[in-house]
Amino acid sequence: MSFVIASQMEEGFNAQLRTHASSPLVIPVPEERPWEAANDADLLLIRPSPQWRRSKTLSRPGGWPGRLKWVYSASVGIDFYPSWVLEAPLVTCGRGVASAEIADYVIAAIYAHSKNLDAIGVHQPSEWKPRPLGRVSGTTLGIVGLGAIGTEVARRALVLGMQVTATRRRPRPSPLEGVKLEDTLQAVIASADHLLLALPATDATRSLIDAAALQHAKPSAHIINVARGSVLDQDALVAALDGGRLGFATLDVTEPEPLPADHALWRHPRVRLTPHVSSNYTAVRQVLLDKIAADLDRFIRGEPPSDIVDSVAGY
Ligand SMILES: NC(=O)c1ccc[n+]([C@@H]2O[C@H](COP(=O)([O-])OP(=O)(O)OC[C@H]3O[C@@H](n4cnc5c(N)ncnc54)[C@H](OP(=O)(O)O)[C@@H]3O)[C@@H](O)[C@H]2O)c1
Image 1 (cartoon, protein in one colour):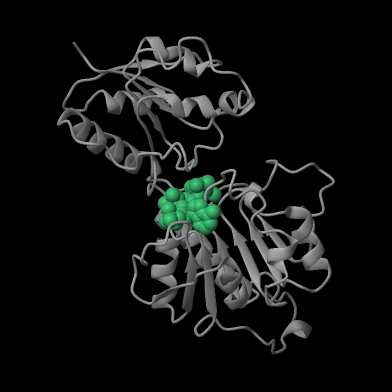
Image 2 (cartoon, rainbow, N blue to C red):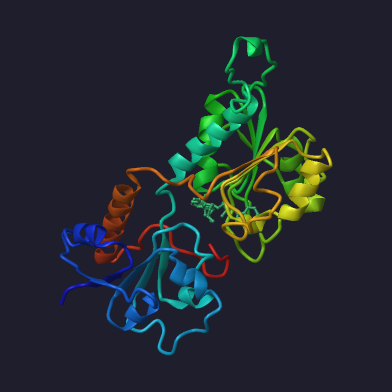
């Protein structure tokens, strides 16, 4: 009997999934209630669609996880799904699929800020004057969350001559030589000219970067959030920027998304806001397909697939 995949991806993606050597039966999921496919499939392939986000507080549907053996989240973050999704026998995520591209976004943000690219363009002869610009080499990047994204950013920063400090949840060595792992969050914040937030949204990380944490930042520091809006206290951020205790913020994520129309972050002169796009790139679909195919191969061989979600840690 065929392995059945209920997929929330578009039909072109599903057509490519069907070409896997195991010839899986790939079926669509009910648009509004994707979890209802649980009784019809072995694997449920999900993405953080508006239907899931609207159902975050929905209680566990009767019979969940049905006949499912595996839930595969196309996104790394599993915080957009209700917590009962993690009760499936196996949950894996798309860790690594866009890490390199997000790292490129972070490096672009660092250069755009240091070289003041938005402000130094000139449009008439009278504007042809020298401007002081910052440097990147020799500055320090502090990374909160040295996982797939944090490591890709660190790799680039080291090549560019930056110092890199970092913290992670578990006391494990750095995957990269040259990264200084600090014992405390405060030490990373205090060291940073650019402070990258690349940690998951969990109960433990909600507002981790709050007013008290921001007090350790250099007044010139540039904070970059590509993780989730919830890890950064946005009121404390605005207060720190307005009070001269923080230099600049690049935010790809906010809470909520989008922010209310009158929120201070939309038009703040020292904020660059982007609409959760740092992971967007043209090849992402193929990279995800390749990752799923390799995981199906492992599963069929009786081996664990990649990037199993730890339901206790929440990522
Ligand atoms: N903007 C976007 O489009 C986009 C795209 C992809 C992902 N994201 C977000 O970015 C997050 C990180 O992605 P990733 O692929 O790098 O994930 P990852 O590989 O799971 O890395 C997460 C890192 O955060 C660390 N961490 C967890 N809890 C922590 C805590 N309380 N304090 C300090 N560090 C903590 C982990 O520590 P250990 O190493 O000890 O486990 C790990 O180093 C995702 O969870 C997702 O929410 C956003």
